[in-house]
Image (cartoon, rainbow, N blue to C red):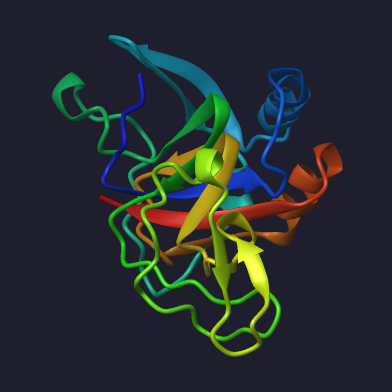
Amino acid sequence: MIVKNRYGLVFNPQHLYFSQADAEPLIAGLQKAGFMGEVFSIDNYQANLVGENFLKMVTFLGCSPQIELTPPDRENWHNFCHIQIQYFPQPIYYRGMNRLRCFCSQCGARIPDKLPDLSQWQVEQQIIQCPKCQEKRSVEQLNWRHGAGFGQFFISVHNIYPNEAVPSDQLLKLLNSFYQGWNYFYYET
């Protein structure tokens, strides 16, 4: 069961394909390092509480962020910061309703807003041509400026407002110690 909370910070490997066998030591390492805490389940939903070192691994911006780290009552259980591991059999295009802006990964020029429907991107292998440098890239190779991700495996930290927090160097180093190359992005529903 995938429950998208209203907003969040999501991590994914840069490579589209990531096996469940690759994920197992990574998840164990994140738990051992204190990024992720114990597992909790409510109905068909399973996720992790944040770990004891979570606040050292995610840097919150601004003067006084409001982060609820413990689950409230059963009715509002999804309204707190928790971590969900999401694995899909095939790579997906993961995004929220936040306004997306993508840029050419070659020259940095903005790609016009009128992108094709990306719901079938993995079947149709959609190629976008940069209006400035004319470089052709597949949609997953564009620079989405932390607004979307592509892949099979995602670590979703739910209930963090877009741009409210960024991963610390410590967290990125930990992720890269298991699998080289990670992206992060925000979603908002």
